[in-house]
View 1 (cartoon, rainbow, N blue to C red):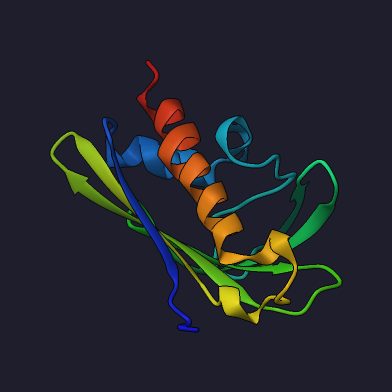
View 2: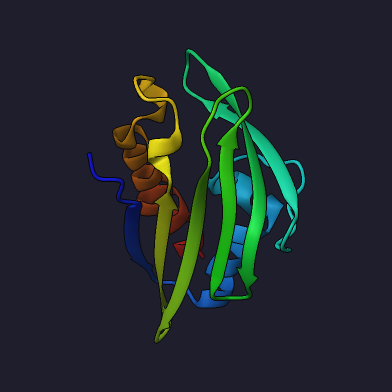
Length: 142
């Protein structure tokens, strides 16, 4: 099995500043992403949130590893009580009055294999819905 990161790219009809605010402002994040109690786009800032499906909720443990305003945001993504360490990176590329977003999630193979919640397909489905639909609708609304 190859350990390739999951990558998804989408282009939004919204300027970079608006997309950056959507991925770094906790009040905006809860409208399309997860309800995160506290979030600051600063290297070393740690945050947690609970998410899952109808059967199980998981506590996500995250720590910001890189911030380049309006260009790049990376943070670790792990689960309380489970092994594994991954990194989620949002990269923004201005294209005229649009923004291309590239999300890369590396290290998925470090999560417990055999748990369907941690399967690559589960992340692919989740990120496709979040990046392809929720964020798109949020940043493109007037």
